[in-house]
Image (cartoon, rainbow, N blue to C red; front, side, top):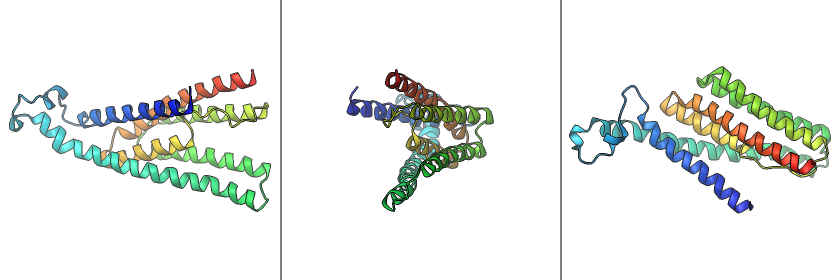
Length: 212
């Protein structure tokens, strides 16, 4: 699969998931509503309580949360990229790049991942799900490190669960949690688990092919 096709597949997949979440999120609340009634034009607006709750009370909050989340996610990706790369760039330019520095950089990245999970836990995500998310993510990075130590000199496989994706997911879902509350932190933790499993599988297949 070409890089362009893979990129379109990933972006299209995430876009479809985001659209489904935007449609589903307004149905979550203390009052249950029926989506069929929400979009039933045969029912007068004044009599359609489900449509009023969906379009007036909930959908604007969901769209606001999505907009804030997308903005924070974009800012987080840019900031994370700058902070993650500036230390390495400075080390190279000043001739101070060392193997120990590379190790510290990797450790700092893993600490950052654990901080993300800690934020989700503090926001209300279940501890077992956060622990599973952390285990899968750390296992993926451990596999990458062992593959490099075993002779895989290439950059390796770019999976769906790299650091920028973790920043995006965490920032977007935390913003949604701030605007809408539960169950967004829990959903974020499950996304960590799901994408972590997929990313681990992608990396394992790539390492197996390269190392034989």
